[in-house]
Image 1 (spheres, rainbow over the protein chains, first blue to last red):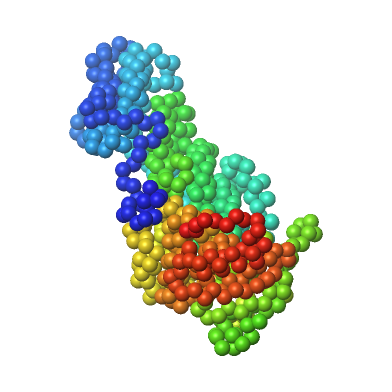
Image 2: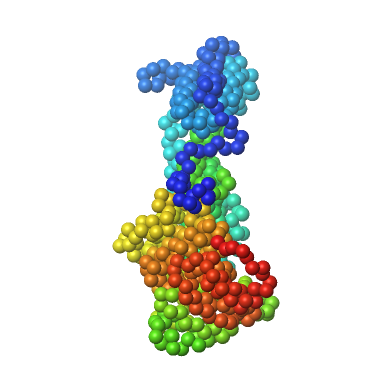
Length: 355
Length: 267
């Protein structure tokens, strides 16, 4: 291709169709039907099992009213499974026309099928037969009952966690990148600050909890402080490293083009360090979730961690699982969001570095 | 030697009594440049040729202002050189494109760095056209070939309208076809802007094909041993008898002629 480009043939530089990754088998549109059914089949079995298998064990099934309609935890469980089926059906149909998306969808079909079967088994063992040790391992429907009982309260706590995370993490990112640039750019600052950063960076942020609680006026601000420092260390260290790893030649080129120091810092060093900055952010992200939940469990008036603590006191383990479920969804969404921002910022790396 | 000429023609850059030594950690020192005196004429194409270690890149870096001479001074248009300046464009051996910027944004860096982007941005398209990269404006550096990247690097330096364009073996890593293509592009661009060009190279043919004068340097310590005029009209034929005569002459002066068999053809 290189040679044909040299003699001037108009070859588009950006190849539109995504090539299949290694280990991803091409799937014909004919075979797609099989994978489509397989994906949905597992969840369909789970719904049927919930509908048809008789409730053998003696379990109290309360009826709640949701928008004027009587609803039990089984109804909610079936609705959730139905929603999963609809979502996968849509994504399957969407994947039909594109070979890359089709192959990806097909490659996940067995996993989705087994997930459906696992839910079926869990439902039968946990709710219908009540064979799992109770109250520690409730069935899936029982976990969902928490949302029927106190959905508002869970939502409130979710929002509290989200607010705490948003405040702490965004401040941590801003401070982290800011100080990282200063540490990375000025050798004197690096000399004095980096060792401190390295030593304090290994301390889990929650260790500062007693200090934070006395220093800050509200529990919320104390928890924000903890998340800020846990995000800050990792991001600042990696930003500094990224800035320092900028090849000297790039600065020389920019200077011969007329660049002065601010340009060298913000238009050369920082973009060059972006991949490392995002590594720092990804690390910090994991630490921040841990710190968030621990801070909430140790002294917050709200949040998903607080909800776990509260439910544990009453041995309502199904509520603990409900809280964990919300965390899984919430944190996955946050990770996904950060991943999307990263893909956008680092789009220049696509096809250049090994993914 | 060129006293009379320098009075008549306009001198854009003069290098006076420059010495430069590199020191390393172990007290060793390398005399990279010794007693360099050189006057570069306005609008000329000057090549500096010599084996590796003769200090030719050091000399170019001094002109660019990326390093300061140990003694002596460099004067551009009557002003002493103290640091890098967009008046002296520099193209590095390995283009060194900014990987996170598209072709057109790489070319625009000089405009942005000098805060003159808004009033000049329509010139970017012109330079993209000039280097023959139309259709690749939005490509990232890793998506284009080495030859294309080198052309982008040249356009990036030229968009600042430099008085002098310094070329540090920009075609060193390219295949002969691409190299010939870029050489012609350089001559074309020089015609258009009347830019003075100083090329560091170890390729004798390239130097003869492009230059008005060729500076021959010898290593350890780096010194100018001779300056040759090339008075062939453009476009030059690389296989012509005069061309080959000059080639033989230079090779002899580089003490290489005896070591190398005479090639039967050149590109």
